[in-house]
Amino acid sequence: MRNIILTASILMGAIYIFFIPQDPVGFKIFMKLVPMALIITFAAITLPFVSREYKRIVIAGLTVCMVADGVIYWFMAGLITFFIGHIFYIYAFKRESRGQIPKWAAILLLLYGAFMAVWIAGSQFANGESILGVAIIAYIAIILTMGWMAIRTQLKLAIIGALLFIFSDSVLAIDRFVVDIPYRDAFVMVTYYAAQVFIAASIGSRVNKYSVNRNNLIR
View: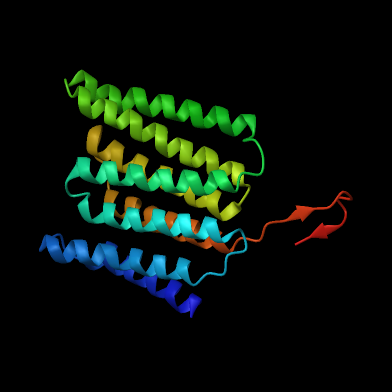
């Protein structure tokens, strides 16, 4: 059943991305939410090898993101709702933190965040859109924090999901505020749905723990 729902979410995501027209908007929004509803169902029936609390918080984050998908046509409302969704993911990843982020990864995230803040938020400040510029900086900070905490979990699926989410939102922001990107919708939505699938699948990640003798692996 789990594989069937995962396949259905991928199929419905592809249908939405490549075949659903822009109008009518109501139907477009509905079809956008169907893959997320299936991903949430996939998460709900996934046996938690990490912890039940992690599963509950991730599902809450997925649900908030699904709401954000519906209200993103009102940009600030969508931005705020996704911001809240990332808070849930940060909390979930923080609970499962298993170590410090490698220095090279921390440096890359910080440099990337600074670059995007100057490039994207800076363009809004230059246009006199100070409130939007501040909102963009806050969003960059929260999504990079989400990526940071995902890396600390040492859960490969969570890390991949977080990085795909950062990529998806980066493409969306660059296209919206700086320069048009060909096939933007496909780039954004394929990586976005993939990010949510990987985060949902991380619920079933097996965590390796070690006894005093690290040669004795305990699952």
